[in-house]
Amino acid sequence: MKKTLLSVFLLSVSGFATAQTVYSFGFSGTTAEMETAGWMRTNQSNPITTALWTIASYTPVTVNTTVTPQIQGNPFNDRVYTNGEVSPVPNGQSGGPNSFALVNFRSTTGTGTISNWLISPVVTVQNGDVVSFWSRKGTSATDDYPDRLELRMSTDATHVNPTGGATDVGSFTTVGVTVNPTLAAGFVYPKVWTQYSFTVSGLSGPTAVKFGFRYFVTNGGPSGANSDIIGIDTFDVNRALSTDDFFANNFSVYPNPSTGIVNLTGKNNMAINTIQITDLNGRVVKNVNAKGVSETQINISDLTTGMYFLNVQTDSGSGTTKIIKN
Image: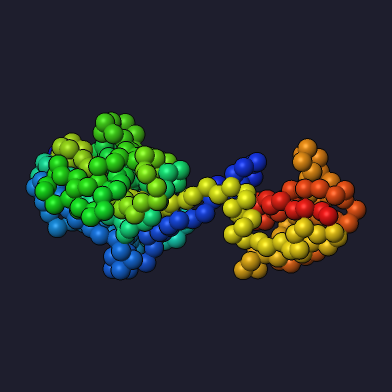
């Protein structure tokens, strides 16, 4: 068999309302810029080649399958392009042309075991953080060479990179996600951008970790039964914030306690959409349409003396704090 490489949570609920972005990387720009940002590449396949993860760098191509070698369309487009059609530059998950990272079957020679790594810089995470990314494989009308991708995590303080060949995982012993773990055929690896995620657990507290994308395919390579070409995009680590945390990070309220006027100020010009005040029984006692201002005053002189909950709605989430009417 001979393979041919195609041409070169914002939910507002009581208790938890929004997420804080701990780390985000969109894989736009160039491979050199990705490395400057702290991402490291290592190919541990057997047999090994010089092929590594790269940022996509496609150009438009006119399909012509009547010549030798054939000129085929770019992978990662939404459809297969036929003779005479111009296959455009593919977009990443977020929509930018060439804004994704990719790796392919040329990670090894002949028939071999692929273990090709893309490793993140250090990210400090804690239990409950949600790690997510998007992935898909290249577009083909007929061929289906099964692919597999692992997202692993290293919690070791020294973060030992894999160096011992295709079976070595270094200190990246925690598997968060595996796409197509059994290398099943039948177009199991998605051919459209699809999001995958896992929730961090088992840590004793905030921990400096690294994440490793491992393109891991047995019986792969140009002559193997498996491996083709895959891409990844939009890697995020998000942390759920309570509404109290969201308020404290984004707003200040004063004076508190107050006998009449309460001043509400958004930090960094955070825009306020609506304000709602409820009593301890959950009854709404005041609604205010702030219309996107970052500072406003609320008159609570008509409220009965006691404690209330002040809830602020913004485009970025919802925050709640306690206020006291004297």
